[in-house]
Each structure stands twice: as C-alpha cells, then as structure tokens.
Length: 571
Image (tube, rainbow, N blue to C red; front, side, top):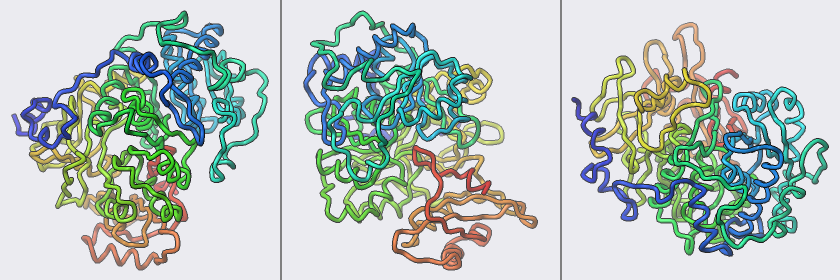
C-alpha cells in the first residue's frame, strides 16, 4: 500500500497531519446536527422568528416572513397537485424567492431543481426534459424563454414573479435597476402575489411546527437537483442529498466560525450554482446568520452592501474578486468588516491573492469542490499560509475538510500515487452525491465504489495540502510536451496590466497543438500582445509560452464565474 493510500485510510482520523491546520472551531470529525436542511430551518423559525433572515437591497425579511411565504407557496403547489418526489424548477436570480421556493419544495417533499437564469431555450429545454419538472418558478422577465419550450416539457404549473415581489417598497441601486424591468402579467401562469403575497403580507405564523402541507424529509432524500456547468459536456443533474447539504453547510459554518449575532453573509455567488446553494443559502440555514442578496452581481452594490451591513463572510470566484478590487467605488467604501473570504470555482494564483490583499486587506483562502461533492472537499485554513507547488506554481486550494477522503491516482492504471506525484483527484465522503439524475451509466463512470473521479489533475503533500494542476481534458499536447494551462495563466497574472487570462490549446500543423492565450486588461492599463508573449517567454520553457495572445474586453464566463475555456478553444 502506498503512502497516499495509507493517508486516505486515515483521512478522518484526529491524528491526520492536516487536522493540526484546522481552525479551532472545526472538529476533526463532524456530524451535522440536523437530519435535513428543513429541520435546521425550523429550528431558527421556532427560536428566533423575528430575527433577520434576508437583507434585500434596503429591506429586511425575517425568518417568520420567509417561512410564512414558503408555507403559502407550498399550499399553492399542493392545490396544483404537486407533491412528494415532483421536481420544481427554479429559474430565478439571487432573489428572496429562491429561498422561499426551496423551503416550500422541502415542506411538501418535492425536489427543487436549479436552473441558471442565463440559460436560453435549448439549454432550458434540456434541464426541464431531463429532470421531468412538473412545476417552474421563474422571473416574469424570463417567461418568453419558457414559452419557447413549455410544450415540450412536462410542466403543469408555472409561477411567475417579479424581483420585488417580496419587497415591493425596496429602493433598487442604480447599477442594478436597468436589470429589473417593469412587472408584467403573464397569461397561463400563476402570479406570485396571488399565490404567496409579499414578505409583509404573507399570512402570519407563530411557529414552524408541521402544518398540513409539511411532510417529513429523510436524510438521504434529494435536497436539490443541481446541474453541472456543462463546461466539459452535456449538463447532468447531480442529486445533492439533505445529508450532503447539511454536512457541507456545517463544514463552512464551523470552518469560518459563523454566528447569527455577529456575522452577515454576502450573497455574491449565484445560488443556482452549488457554491451559492451551499455557501450562501446553506450556511444561512445552518448558522442563522443573515444573508444579503442583490438580485445579480454588481460590483458597486456588493461593495456598498459590505459596508452597509458590516458583512463578514463572502465566497466568490476569482473573477468576482478581480471585479471588486478594480472598481473605483472601493476607494470610498469601508470593507474592513469582511474578514472571511474563501474563493471557489477555480484555483487562485498567488499573484491574485497579493493583488486582492493589497487593494482591500482581504486574505483569500482556497476552496475546492464540485457540484458532485456538494461544494467543498478542501478549504484553506484561515490561519495557515497555503504553500505554492514549486513545480507547477499552483497555490494550494487547502486541506481535506472533516469527512473528506482523498486519493491521487494514476491516469493510466488507476493505482494510488504517493505524495508529490501528479494524478487524478478522487474523493469520497458524506458530501459526494449518489449519482446523476436518471443517468446510471454516467453515474457508474464517475462514481466507482463510492469514489468520485473528478477529472481534475492534482497532487498532495504529506501534510495534506492539495494542488489542483488542471482539468485532465484541458492539457495541451504541444509537439509531445504537455502544457498545463494554469502554468501559463499564473505567469500572465504576474503582469500588472493583466486582469484575466485563459489559455487553451489550438490545432497546429507542426506541433499538433500550440498555446494560445486570451487576456483582458486592467481598466486603464496598456499592454501589447507582443509584450505579453515576451513576458511569458522570459519566464517559462520555450514549449510553454503562448504563440498568440488575443486581447478581449471581457473573457466569456458562465454565471458561476468560471471561464469558458471550451468556448475560447472553439473561437
């Protein structure tokens, strides 16, 4: 048995070397304190009904108001014949209605199904048909997309809502106002206000005791169908269970020591994505700390909300932190309260960590996970400095969280590799999904004997630090030499004019593939493509540096902030 295999076998032991790096509030072994997310929610409604749950622009909704709205929506759905096991698609932005809809689904035993609000007709059709959703909650402004595919799906009920339905008297910031159109009536749908009312007008409720529309939710029941981002193929519905969501939300809560009386969560990550679902809504439900939602990402409003609410916790992709640190409003905004700042979605470089810290005082810490792992398998300890891999230059994303078992295996024969060698990252633990919705072959390929094969290349140290080198499918084969895109991107980020960088392999008659970089510049900065190529050539092996650099105003991303490497590769 290799050293790596022995470390895997003891990854949940109190004697594992990485446990010494855990924050004092995170135990070596962790058991979620609730059988389901719904039970965690009920505990807050029963004990602190008038405490703030959601800040939305300049208005606040209490736990009791959110719960009453969820009861009203649950009742409306039951009257439509929707119940246990039915899928309810959620096609919303970061609005309070997201939380209300998820809670209402859990109350009747239904399965909320996340839908990226940026999806268009063909993509929406795939999720609706694949999930078999019978109900859909969507923004009224998105209904035209729904109308294109409604006849091809199993939808029986559509509820339309306006972003201000829960807070009709809210003042919308100038940067977000253009993205909130006028309210519209949508024939053939149920209006949210008719089914639910508003946050203030929903029927009062004194406790969260089980009502006529509430069913018991098992630990192993599906809490949400969360569709993979589709960056490497057709989007699949990961079956995130209540057990997994309670575990992962509790990990974040304990790791970052979140408390309802001293913490405020900034809802920067989109909640349709697993990161936002767990590290925004999930930790709100587990910890009870209020969450500030802002409909959609706007750097100035995020900065303002941090100051206004004295927010303490946020998680976001590196691209979001870049946008925040580059915004002119930062110079006149007090963001010093924000001290808990993990970054997920993609590994961050040391250059970015340094840039963000210099601009804001925030210390970014890595977070690694996938839709299939219900968010984190690794987190960067708040009080430990992550190492940099001397070979690849990658900054560590962290160490295994409580409950996570991690192996690095050979990409050729699947054998376990010792610390320091690069292979595929495979993980197991209570956070791993049982499979993909109605996709047994895909499930068996990805999850073998309880181990999820991530498709990511990485390596670990003896102390448990994980370095994510790249996606296996993203490796560039340049004349027989393997080029890891991250290596080139990390060098580009060292250039002071580079805001974002994405490196891909493109066909080349001589080398088979060659390296091409797409770059956006810091506002006001200047750099030529020749200058950037020379910058890389001076700092890396000849086969690695990009033979072409293309400057773009913005690099394409999905709604969770991940750069769309495949789209650039096909450009």
